[in-house]
View (cartoon, rainbow, N blue to C red):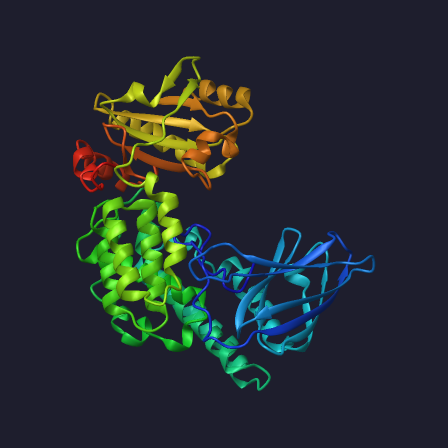
Length: 488
């Protein structure tokens, strides 16, 4: 796990794109030579992301010889975070022009055994030490036990973690062998991990603690957001946690202004807030990320208008627009108000059912798998929701992405699961999973009475807010379809 993997594994905000590239400068080649003790794979790679709004990674490979030795050269434009990849294992790297390091590790355990020597070794050793002390230590992570706390003890936990991390940072500050860029990076990591976890705590707790309502925070809980330097911090632009914080901040600010994520105007509000409040290289990147969210979860007409505004008034040098335009074209047929992909599947009882069979009803679709722990955890809540809305104009459709049909059928039958249960052939690589652009399960969709998407990311079945969200969704088809361009 890399140094920047600080957000909880349960966090809904682990979207993970790299921060803005450094100021344009000539590329420099960095060199890694290494020795692997107990070779388990034939290649080793360095992973970089070339574009701040494109999740695709650039992988530079090197062959590992029979002695476990390798030499790898990669181009960088300036100080940057990267990953060393060996098999399924990953370790964080900090690369700068002039980096020339020897890297050694055990083949079966890269992350915890990696050692560095040479120019750039000090910064990378700090990365590895930070991972071991804080990232790999559950005592410092925002996990369910901490999320279940109330405000005062949760803040006490965050303050203690930050205090311990600052002790670590003191060594970095005093080491003349690390660059100012790396010092800024580590400081931002501590500062924005704290800010992110504090900012998202209320939302996370609502999702994790299903037995209670949304926690009411004290009147001063969010006062830390009043620090203008927290939003516009030019020394933090290389840090991914800073970018995640800014995105979470505009979400929070839009919600505080009375917009919900299901509202047609939510992403327009986020876009406007980013445009108004942010400065410097992060401004177009966060606006771009809001656009990407709108392409996936917003409304076609509004997304198209924002994209044109971005092209004409924000990205006049055309650096980010081409990636955003391609993303828009990819998702425009999957937006709110667009027809949901049809399906015709066999149910657990042997019937053949299609989406058209539910016309006139609100449809809550749950894609799941019998081998997914989170999916199984949500099943009891699915049963409760089905009972709560029994007799109302809604149907709960559970579509399993299981390759093993007998195991799926047996589970549905033995547990006497309520609702409609269907199975999609091909699993997560099958045509229906591709049609719904599924990346993981469980995944949920609300489909309006007219068969169009109403919400492509509704509240999870286990969330208390799911009940209110469903209640507010009846009869909304025309409202959301009206946000579509003419002729859609």
